[in-house]
Image 1 (spheres, rainbow, N blue to C red):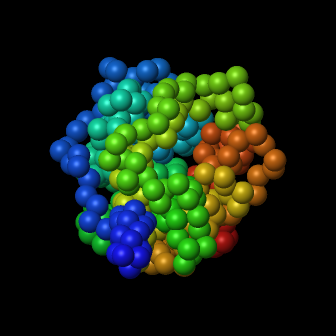
Image 2: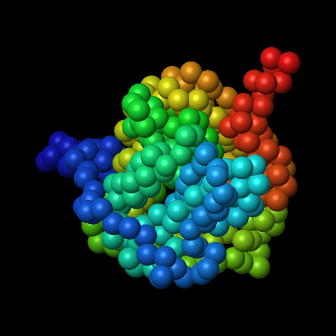
Length: 311
């Protein structure tokens, strides 16, 4: 009897922890609905200049919106880049609809956007933060070896594992039980957050969903496995940025990417922010670092560092 009970417990834990057999239930291609955004801040950002031959695609995180790039998008545009920061489908509109979407659909939309831009510009760069940084890595894994390869990739605070005892990374122990909970509820305490009176250093301007999104979150965690597995497929120039004190995505993710990529031109920046009242995660949103960090990214994109080295 005890053996049966122990076996059942082991199988239960294995099913939850490894996500064995998991498949996204929502896979049909969808588009974002700009007409239903809960705030103007949640809309896509598009800035185009006459005659520009280079563009940058900015990818937001989970469950945020393009608003995290409000400052940097203007700087990139002033530097002569056309800027595209699309609102991913399901985000920025209604949290009750968001739970009916998956990573498969978000990444499919991003790929369609990427391929369209790749055909329009001589040079195309991709930059993402958090889940957007993970998607940027996956763009590299998908396209680096072919004719649609990005010219350069910038990944900020990207997760490639969620909980991994082997790697010493535990983001949230509750994830080990989320697959079971997802059978009954798609989310807990879901809502909308478009700015707040708390926070500092720009964090009060964060715009996105609030709450615990169980089903979409499982989809995201499951997708991390393949992204981590395929890091060796990234051969495009890659710039990885992560703060050592990140409270949302553990810094250990940065070290995994650093050790497993195969980029031909790799740069890494490990920042150390002060004791601000935020998570040190969405770096380009924070007033204290966004100017210097944006310029550092531009130097990487425009090869200014190489030019200085040659001089």
